[in-house]
Amino acid sequence: MADHHPENNGDTSLHEESAQYQNGNASVHAEINNDLVYRMPHYNEMYTHHVDSQYSTYMQNEFVDLSKHDRETVIEESPNQRYAKLNTVLGKGAYKVVYKAIDREEGYEVAWNCFQTTKAEFNDLSQEIKILKQVRHPNIINFHDCWYKDAEFIFVTELMTSGTLREYIRKLSLPNMKIVKRWSRQILKGLIYLHSHNPPIIHRDIKCDNIFINGAHGEVKIGDMGTAKMKLGKKYTVIGTPEFMAPEMYEEKGYNEKVDIYAFGMCLLEMVTGEYPYGECKNAAQIYKKVSQAIKPESLKKVQDPKILDLINNCLAPENERYTAQQIMDHPFLTVEPEVVLMTADETKTQLTLQVVFKGMDKLSVKFEFNVERDTAEEVVNEMIEEQVLQDNYQQLITHEINRILRDISKQTNEADPNKEEHKAPWPSQPGTPPFHVGMSPNLNPHKSSHGPSPTPINLERDSPNGTIASSYVQSQPIMPNESPRKNSISGPGSQEWSQDYEDALPVKEYPDETPIEQFVHDTALAINRDTEKANDWSKKLKSQDIMTVGDLRALMDEDWGQIGLTVFALRALKNALHVTKSKG
Ligand SMILES: Nc1ncnc2c1ncn2[C@@H]1O[C@H](COP(=O)(O)OP(=O)(O)OP(=O)(O)O)[C@@H](O)[C@H]1O
Image (cartoon, rainbow, N blue to C red; front, side, top):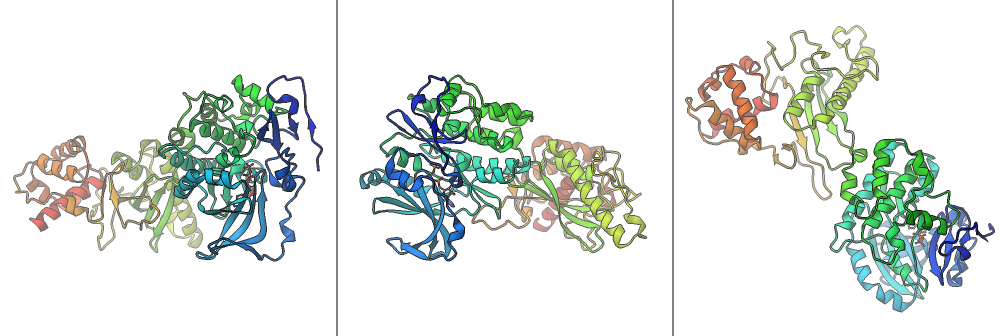
C-alpha cells in the first residue's frame, strides 16, 4: 500500500492541515470535522485512506482480482428471489461494493450494489428512491429494485460491461474527436433528461468515474445516480469531487442543476487532454483556492481546437452565464457531420439508393435515389438544399461524400471489368480532392442529367417500370424506441411530415383546364407543406415556359416536364397532384 503523507506546501486555505493526499488524482469523499478524506478514483488503485473505520475495513489496500473467481456461484438472493447475487465483485468504491447478479425474471446480468447505512437513513431516502425508480433513459443506468438488509442498503441497477469512462480514456490514451463527440452527446442526453424533470434532478457528482461504458455498442450511461443524498446521510458531509465541483458548490448559498454542466465541462477537458483536471494541484485546498479565484485548470491550455475551448470555457463560466445541457448539445463542436451510406445498388451499379445519416443524432436522415448515368452529386445535393430537406452548410460535405461513394463504385467496377469504358468515370481521383463545384460535374452521360437544359426525358413516377427515376428523396424519421420504422415516410423540413400515402394530402378537387396555374400550384404546394414563396417560385417557372393554366400543364409531354427547370421533387408533386385530381375527381 502506498504511504499517505499529509501535504503542506504553505497554502493556508480551508482544510489544508488535515489533508491526506496520494496524488492529483485523489477525490475528496468526505469532510469530517474539517478533515478531508481522499481516495484514488480508480478502484484498481485503491489506496483509500478512510478516517471512518466502518468503511476503511474493506476499502484500505484492497485490490480486486477478478481472476480469482474462476467459478461464479450464487451467494445471496433478493427478498423477492428475483435477483441472485454472484460472488463476482465488479468493483469497489469509497461507499459501495458492487457485485454481479442475475435477474432471474429477465435473464439479464445486473449490478448488485451494497451501501452500508442505517435503517433510519434508508427510510429517509424513500423520496429519492421513488424518483430513481421513475428515471428511465437510455443514457442513465437503470435503477431496478432496492431493499434494506443487515445494515446495508442494497440496490440493483443495470450492469455496464466495460468499466468507466475514466478507465476507457486511460486505455485509449487519447480518444479521437469522433469518440469524444459521441460520448459527450450521450452524457448530455442523459443530463437534458434529468434537468428537464420537474423539479430538475441534479446528479451532483458527474465525473468520468461515474460515467459507464458498454463497449460492444459504444453506449455511455451516467451512473451513481442519487447516491449523493445517501452519502450525505453519513456522519460527515460529502462535498463531491473537488476537481469537478462548481464554485457555487463550495459556498453555502445553494446551487442548481448547472453544477452538472460545470462538471461535464471538466469531463470534456479530461476526455480531450487525457489529464485529470487540476492535476497541477497537490491537494483539495489548492483546488478550492483556484476555483474560488476562477483560475481554470492548467490542462485547458493544451486544448487547441477553438470550438472545444469555447465549449469548455462556457461550462466553466459563472453559473448565470453557463449553458444549459440543451444549449451545449446545440454547440457547433457537437453538431454531427453527416455521412452518406450506400443502401442498395442494382446489378449494374447504376441505380443507387443512398442515405444521408446523422449518426447518433435525432436528426432526420435523408434517403434518395441516385442514377449514376444521369445524376450528379452537385445537382442532387443542390436540389435537396433547395427543397429544404438538407441544410445548406452540408452542401460540400455531402457532395464530397456522394462522390466518394461513386469513386468506390467506379473502382470496384473497373477492378471487376477493366475494359468497361463507361465506368472509367472522371470522379475525383484523390481522396482529398475538393468537392466539385456546380458546373464541374463528373457527369458520365454526354446527354446531361435529368436536370437543367437536358434533352434526356425523365420519368417522375417513383414506381416507374423502367426504373428511370432521377433523384427523388425520401426523408425518414429517426426510429424511436418502441416505434417501428415508418415505411418510406416522406417529410419536409423540421417535423412537418407527409406519409407514404401523401397523395391523400394532395388537392382532391377537379381542376378544369382553364384553372390558372397559380391556383393549382398554390394548392399543391400547401398540401405538401411548402410555403407560398415556394409556390410562387414554381408558378413563375411554369409561366416562363408559357404554362398558364392547368390545361397547359396537362398537355405537356413527358420530355417537356424536364424543361421546366423545377426540382424533381416539385415536378413529382405537381404531376402526382394532376394524377390524383384526375383519379379522385
Ligand atoms: N452498474 C455497474 N456496472 C458495472 N460496474 C459497476 C457498476 N456500478 C459500479 N461498478 C463498479 O464498481 C466500482 C465502484 O462503484 P462506484 O464508483 O459507483 O462506488 P462509490 O462508492 O459510489 O464511489 P464514488 O463515490 O467514488 O463514485 C466502479 O468503479 C465500477 O468499477
